[in-house]
Image (cartoon, rainbow, N blue to C red; front, side, top):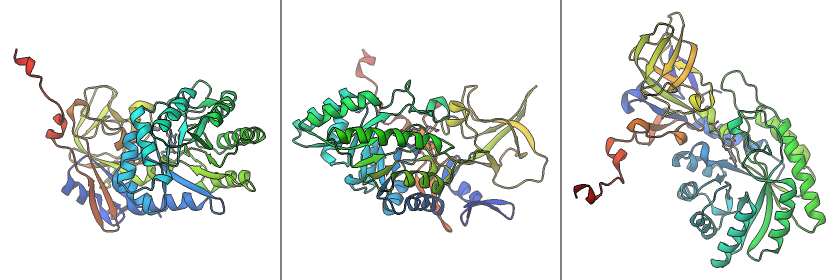
Length: 419
Ligand code: LLP
């Protein structure tokens, strides 16, 4: 069951006409379907039935408090990569013992914050980080629970900016050094070795790279076992892709089957950190056409959402389908959908065959629930978009549109300018 569907020539989110939300809230706005969010989480979680596992939603994909709160209520844990995400997670009510903390550049105050919150584990990405965590834990008189994030050197066959498990990537610790890392960790007074972790990349559309990574991790766990180092948690990261256009990623059940197969009989507890697969297709970006313009060689649809609202098209050349909110019978056009920002890279679609939308029409930029709002910015002093959640026939603004005052909040003019 899909929850962004045309009914009587008009796009709905669940039982609410999107046109009506646009009239009340203005544009642009992100729109999330509660039913889709919930179903995606449950399908993913239930795919691992029979295995001890903790699904930790990857906050970076969508950090809106309402979304975090929903996943928390469904039993999710949380994968965070900053003190800010940890703050949001705790605010949304996640139990600290369901929070894992990854990232190559953890800072002292962030480490202390996570130690004091008593999270499930740190996914450690360098030996220097390991030593720092030990030192901070000592000072705070705590034991730091850690996993080492290993870099299994597998090719996830995805966009180079979002592949993370190759030797040349900055993430994790290579397999040999990881063994060293565990030896060091086992001698550090304030470290508790809890697990092993990897995350090989994002928007991965086949199961094979995951299985290759899993097999490497299992080998390492065996070697560690022989050295007397016990591993309890195996964190496989996130990365399962979704359909934006014509990709056909494995269904979560297929992805899970391969993992469950490979882990059967072990007493490892699995952790997963899915982001995109849960929220990507549960959200859209709604924007209004400001103008049409025919250039000498291109047709332009100028809309009120720009690269500051949705960065993926320009940053990765990512494809997002564009649908009219009110269907049109007109012949389709081929156009660039561009925003109001002063950059040639400010586009949502290029040379796209699309409906013949006119000035004042609404468009829906599909599959925008993951890495949409979270990567948005105030570039060109554009207030960030509103976020709205729909449940059945109700909607709620889960983040107010920013106002001009928000743009200058925290700025101050130094008195010495008057000297
Ligand atoms: N765990 C870790 C340690 C990660 O770094 C990531 C994503 C995830 C989990 C979740 O991955 P997912 O299931 O969403 O693929 N901004 C890019 C994606 C960057 C992903 C970064 N890390 C995009 O818009 O495509």
